[in-house]
Length: 193
Image (cartoon, rainbow, N blue to C red; front, side, top):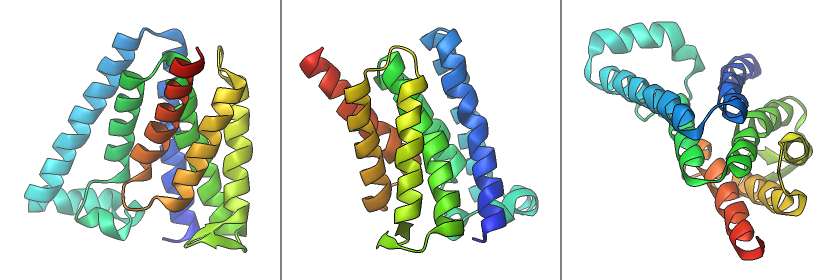
């Protein structure tokens, strides 16, 4: 995928910021209902895309240039993003859910753009030092801006999310980034209160 398509894709990804920002002001049940509706619609679109030739042609005509090659036969990143958001809000306490979602929505997007544009020093497969540095810096700032977050526990989440982004590629990162960071941070909260 070229840089322009990646930028458009990540710009759409950034629209998901509505989830952590809304969660700051709204009750968890309302956020889960909103995301749940989004998951339902996304799954319906996926089912139609896989089983209706007419719908698939329409979908590909509108959004096909933004799909990665594997998404033509698998779920799109947007569907995984909604599922990841739902599970993250469902499983974790508020500040951990918000931070984990910001890692996914902001840090992953910035790392991808910086890595594709300026990434010259590869550290693992297609991941670069430049992209990884952007992930770490932005994730660090995400921890700082979320109310009630615990700095040291948040830093453990930063390192976890970045490591998962670099090394885990068999499972969609819209699931692995927020869930792995959330599990580590939630575990540390339970251990150290």
